[in-house]
Length: 358
Image (cartoon, rainbow, N blue to C red):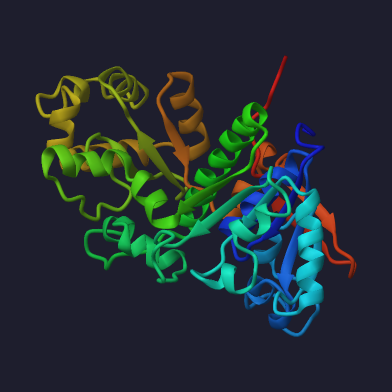
């Protein structure tokens, strides 16, 4: 899509959250100019390489490539007057600035909203912070996962709190900032004026606690580590091993689906068992239910069982590793490739998955 082909985005952000916002607009046709810190050799994630990536090559890390597709990259030293002026000149023709400076650094470097809007009154300045604009505290995603309650809930009952394998708080904050920018663009159409849009990682994380937050606010229930299980639904998140030693997971949301599951497993009696007749009872007796379901699931090949479950509209899925995910045609269609100036062929998945039709 090229819906934003007339927009110019100036990205003064690094790591994941800010750059993922820039890539969102790049995918929708905007011109995105990414300004990286010349003093530090560019975005720090350029060097966040896996052990399997050559640390001595001039290739960019896979991490960096994940959110930096189709951007024009320039290196600048904000402490140098000449470089600052180049940025100011770009601000004059830009629609949006994306920034994630530490508190006070934006003003010190002359890259704060008040300074930049003087060059362009219609500028939308989108700012990300860790704990809000008034906090000097800096943090990476895992700190926000800890502070916002995600880590405490995540893991198995016998394990310590665990972080999620994706920097989810960064991505949640990026979505919040995208939404704010889109509202600001709509507002600018009406007022012809720009504005400051802010989002913090901490508030974005708390906002995403959703039902777990309400479980505490209304029922005073502190969510505990349950692995893949759901505190309100069963069997939901229970994993089973198939006959061919592969994992699959169930997500039974109502009694009708549970009855259909029992039919597929040729064990209709389970649906009428007094312990499992409704969701509340299944939650109370989920361990007994899982022990009964496991041998029934283990009697089937995973692919065949999933086909039968799908045919009976029973929500279930294969537990896939990353290689298996990208064997899926849908995942293959989401790959964006780009050849960098040094000849490196890079790949990542697109972040825009919605479609617009007239």
